[in-house]
Image (tube, rainbow, N blue to C red; front, side):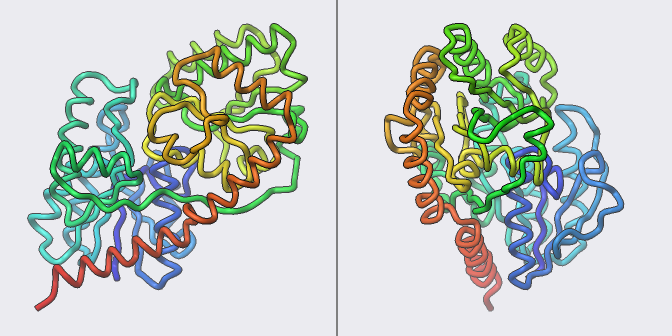
Length: 378
């Protein structure tokens, strides 16, 4: 089949869950023998990169502002796709899916698929108009494509209740690896198993201010047991929030901002952390959380429904936005390192059973084929 992915910034993924999703799925689809194309933005993917791990890269421009970058690039990609004879056009998130109507009207043969990753309008970086548009896009996502994938049961239930539309629940996934190198750790004077990690974009709904406040409290009480806090990631049109986070640190040298990290450097950080913390106020299905589980790491998460769908035990969940509860839960792990090793192994087995990318892409592949045959049968 000839498959196109629209709506992501590009691949290989540097930052962003949507980009990582697109890369993991597209590369595996190419390995399955499909002719795969990913539309990439010129301000994200190297314009000279035309192929990546068997996937064709189509570079197009966009209007590089917070509100117009995604939609302008998606519009150009959607128009370009009309003339490429694709069998499947897969939109990677709700905002870009608003333009799938064009594909649905003018491309009668292609199957239109969308992935409902999360309720983006809850993300506090967006203004009033952007949030209103994202709510409109959500309605399109749940009603117009031939099939819509929801990455969590929570989103499936939400769509059924609000739009009376049954979505296909196929979760996000993870890989299983371990990087034994410590070269990147050495650059930051980090030691194996001696730091707590949080990884993702520095945006307010990720709740990193709660984590910094909790860790600051532990350091002030000298209860961090020489553990450091590493925050890996960068802002996304959120300079004011990034500045706020760094002010919260209060010159605490035990808190390290590495900036955006990918590839082997990120592998090192996950491989050797003592504990992974996900303090988000809202999520879809966190790829960073699944990634930590794939490395066999303990994950401490806020009690939002999307996190509780993955992490079941109360010992590994803290009350959302509650700095004191988060502080107490971190301290419990610091004081009980034997608990960390056992729980990390349990997370790894859970990830292998439910969140293996190879199995997940097999489900998506079947969805493509079944939907295409149903749509194009004589």
